[in-house]
Image (cartoon, rainbow over all chains, first blue to last red; front, top):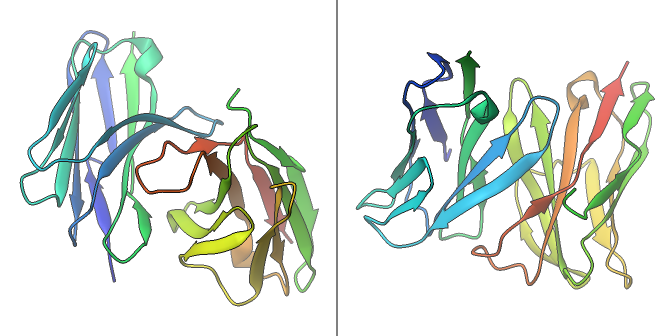
Length: 110
Length: 114
């Protein structure tokens, strides 16, 4: 069935290092959304990209949506301890189904 | 605080039992979504309602059902519970339920089936 995989599953970085998580869907998504879930918390919407090849920035975070609308990435520059959490990509396919990626858990070592 | 409320926060029950989880959306939001988060299955979309009507259905088991009431709160009913149903259940809400709408998640209900 449909799958949305993210790599890596876990990432430990020193504070100040960069971080990237990659999201790959087995089918085309109509848009891609990114969420952050802090330990013990609930998913919080970060951003949405709709057009193929779209790039959006939010301060130290850069989001990309692939040309084929099947992959995406989130890059964080100069991580801070407040960036700790699990980052999920998510999106709907064209058959009205919504999928979350497998998530990347980020640990930032001060 | 997202403005979405879920009750109860925790629920412990036995196999074979039935439980009801409740969700109140943010003020003004017409659409409600239910998700299940478990270690082995990750975050899975279960079902979506818009203004009282079912709009989209995901990986929801036949033992599970949901509804959205005229006051827009929603309930997720889980019956004939199995050990594998133990999970965190999230409700989310959005303004009009399109897939480009921002979804606001509630704090979740942690269900433990013993």
